[in-house]
Image (cartoon, rainbow, N blue to C red; front, side):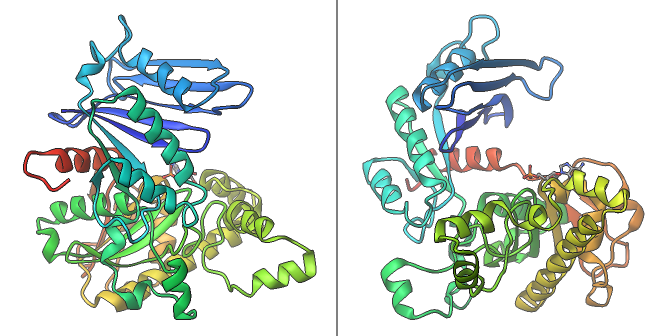
Length: 406
Ligand code: AMP
C-alpha cells in the first residue's frame, strides 16, 4: 500500500509518500509560505538514495489547494514522477496535533471527525485550523482515497487523572476541558516500540523514559508500552526548555507582565511561545549555534545549555520516581539523536540512580538505534532515531487493514 502522509499547517504542507510494503519513502517535501507573495516548494524524489532528485519551485502559491496541485504534478510527473497515476495513492494519513480527549485512537476521516476537529480549535488554535485546511483539500482532490487522522495526543490518553489534571477549579476541566494532553505522541509511541525491540523485550514489559529533544522538546514516562506521564500540557508550551518556548514557568508571570509591561494575553502568549526558551536566554534557538557561541565564550549561551541540562535531569529524576523500574532512557529527535553534549548534560550526576553513559559510545558519530550506556549501567541509555511520518503511515495502514476498527 502507498500512503501519502500530510502534515498541513496554516501556511505550509509537509508531505511524504511511502511504499508500505517495503516502508520506503518514494518522495517527500514541503510547500511553504502559502498565501504569501512568493511560495516555495521543495520536493525530493527517492530521498536518501542514489536516485535522489531534488526540485525547488519558487512562485506565488495562493492556497493549500494550489500547493497540493503542485505536489501532485510532481508525484505523477511523466519523467521524474514516483508513481504512474494518482490511483497508486491508496491511503492518506493526516498528522493532527490536538485531538483533545475526544480521540483516543487514529481514525478514518469522515464529516463527524471534521466537526470534532473544528470544535477542538480552541484547544489547538495554532495547529488545528491548518490541519483542517489540509483535510479539506485532500478530501476534495482524492475523493475516493480513504483518509486517516493520526493524533499527537492519542499516545498520552492513557495518562491517569492524577497526571493529567491541573489543580485548578474542577469546573474548568468540566467546562473547558482544561487538562494536560501531552504532544509528540507519534514520536514517543514510535521510539518506545523501537526501543523495546532493540532491547529484545515486548513493549508491554518495558518501562522507558523517552526524551524527544528537538526544536520542541518533551519527555514521556512509558510504563508497559503506555504513556503514564509527559512533560507537555494543555499545549506544547509546558515542560522542558525548548528552542523558543519557556517550558514550565509560574502562571503568575502573566499578570505581572500585564501589570508592569502592559502586555496583552496574545502578546504574552507570543512571548512565552516564540521569544523564550534558548532564544529568550541567549538570542539563539538552534542548538548548533548555541554550541558555537559557547565555544566563543558566550556566557548566556552557556547558561541556556546549563538550564536545558538541569531541567532535563529534573524530569528524568521525576519520571524515575513515577516508574520505579526503568529499562532505558531513550534519546530522540534533532538534538537527542545528534548532540552528545546535550545527552551528557541530561544524564550528568544521575549515576547514583543507575544511569551511566559511556563517554566514547556517546561521542561515536553513528546514526541508527544504539546503546550509549556503560556496560555496567543498570538503566540502559539508548539513542533511537524518530520517524513520525513512518509511524503515521503505519497507523494509517493499520486503521484501514481489513477487520480493523475504523
Ligand atoms: P528537530 O525539531 O527534531 O528537527 O530538531 C531541531 C534541533 O536539532 C535544532 O535545535 C538543531 O540545532 C538540532 N540539531 C540538529 N542536528 C544537530 C547536531 N548535529 N548537533 C546538535 N544539534 C543538532
